[in-house]
Image 1 (cartoon, rainbow, N blue to C red):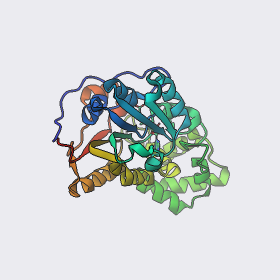
Image 2: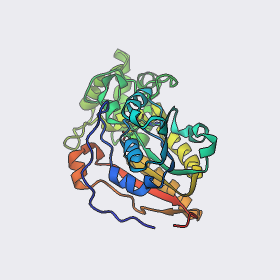
Image 3: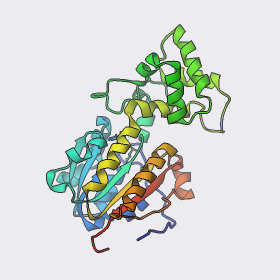
Image 4: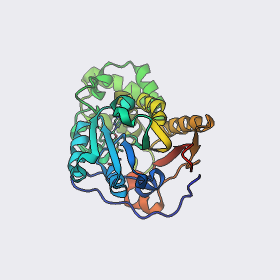
Length: 313
Ligand SMILES: C[S@@+](CC[C@H](N)C(=O)[O-])C[C@H]1O[C@@H](n2cnc3c(N)ncnc32)[C@H](O)[C@@H]1O
């Protein structure tokens, strides 16, 4: 079965303790069909927007809500409190998906969502260190409790070649060599400890890019990916998530940049080629222009989804 893209309503606004607007919300609900009830997993609960919609749409949904950021979990716990024990919150990386599911849910899950990347709450909180706009410590760890290495520590210790490789591979940055060299020069004067220091240094080093996009955007993306081992996390997620699904179980993922999307596309295609899954959105869905206008952060997102065969659909 293939879902066709249609015009969806404009996105909901952020609610309660979060500043994050969930992207492609109606499409996620249409794909995951929570009205079927059963075990659902939100592997990236964030501000709880998608989780809330899943719980509202299916009165028999039991949800496992995962996030590696304890502040995100606190916000979503507050938002989803009214659903009581229908929700279990788990502080863990989604690479640990199989281990955190209750025994009775493994292989029986009706729907899994992963909305990769960082939330507006994280981007807008200077102390988290992801923001180019707001000055803060160069941190970028999603889980400061278990992750030891911040972006500042990486920048202080990496060789010029290593920095260049990260910026080019994980940021697809054209000026990676020039930026890596400028960082090494700057380290002679003193350490880079603040997001504004790094953003200013890059602004002085490379020509101004496309209008509205800060020239440090790609380097910030690359550092975030390295600090949080984001691509390894995604690979591990795709190793286990499809195997947690029941017959007719659905897996939906939202990606935000080409590195994530390439991984998602290949992993889902492999599952479809195995014959066990069918593709619900062969080219993926992107947000409508109305959604992009209301929520500019949705612009680069893409939803992909597969379904386990054999449930009589
Ligand atoms: C785009 S936000 C999700 C927003 C959410 N869907 C909503 O509606 O509010 C991504 C979330 O995933 C979390 N995250 C990122 N990588 C993770 C990982 N490897 N394991 C668990 N959570 C992760 C982030 O901390 C962040 O809260």
